[in-house]
Image 1 (cartoon, rainbow, N blue to C red):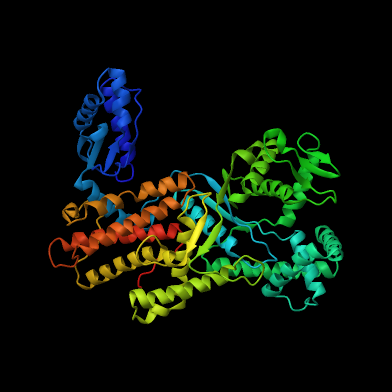
Image 2 (cartoon, rainbow, N blue to C red):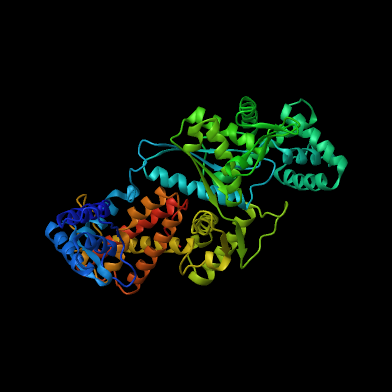
Length: 579
């Protein structure tokens, strides 16, 4: 009843239109426009399009549709009425909202889930780290988006396989290996040393022609897996960085079912390119290219004149390896918006090689990120490290807790809690913008406990938990009924709760929209609206007032708590029970 209400209303409106002889009318059912009352609203297009068919005015037609809907006696609907502009407002019944509260509590961790991806296998490439560079802010952004999408799709019934695509072979790796040898650091390898050598090798490659030639030779040796000093350093560096990657992603609450390495995909990709000469790829000045200009795209090199596969060929090989091993119904890749044109070329070339590779692939592009209200220094190159950002945000969170919340609890300075809140702040900031939109991490706004931030949601959840603990201590919170509304039929009588209940009921719809459009920001928007409505209600309501209404008010608090808990999980955040 509670999850299918929009569909129920759409069927009812379609029936009403058929009942007045206007089956072909255009309409939509959604939330009312600002300033218009009601829980749902039928668009004015229904009255206008049906009116043209019937030869009646929109106002008169709206009244006819409204009468048909009233006659249908939809169980979840209390009343319908025509509003300004020929909208038809639908007011849901108190029993419906009582059912929502009860269902949220009964379903628990499954509240808000759906089955729209049931039976689907989704392969999600949620991180592509460079194994000779420390995990930086861009990687943190990628994995935050990927983790949320993974959880959304699992919450919607899909079998999700999370993989990583580490860049373990490239000219950049050769630059780092060259610098390690030149600096005599072969026996002092660490993540820090690799990062420093990556920067040094990159600079020398651009400045020193002799160094450039040596690096190119090292790159050839590594691609050919030639035994020797370079290969030994390479293998130790890969192992070191892979362990580092596993540790930091575990710290972020992410894991992987498998890895596909660039060194593997390069071999396969080169074979694919060579097998499709000259029908898809052509030779130009000794290199093998894809003439994207024929399709309104960029022409790109896939194999260099030295016979080495570049990123383009590697991405083709990656597709073959992924589809051969996992056979997904959907393959999702998280990328940077600046790679949009690059992946348009990859998708076109891939589709010509194997149509399903293109048809089943989704490339999710996030925007570029910048910082406001604070800066992050970078030890290696010009991109801040993920660990440095997390630590800086943790420090800022601790200051906020001390000054804003005036924390006195012993656990206020618990490092694990500070880190969890810091990660919530980061992930919320990363996910609050839609795909392709640039991201601004504003230290003041992102750490605010007053709205539009991860800590704000965490604090709302902790407040719910605190109220419920007090209710339990007072012995006035009973267990939820498994039957929607049973025992809580009077929840609609809870003072000032109508707006809160209306928003609470929309959680399943927000989740469904987020997964259908691959847009986690619909969840962040929803949770912020819910937390705001809850805080406004709580500010004007004494929950534990000793009256008969107290159990019903606590039931509402419990439903909000469960919704915030599930929503925060979908964002990749760990909800705090105390703050």
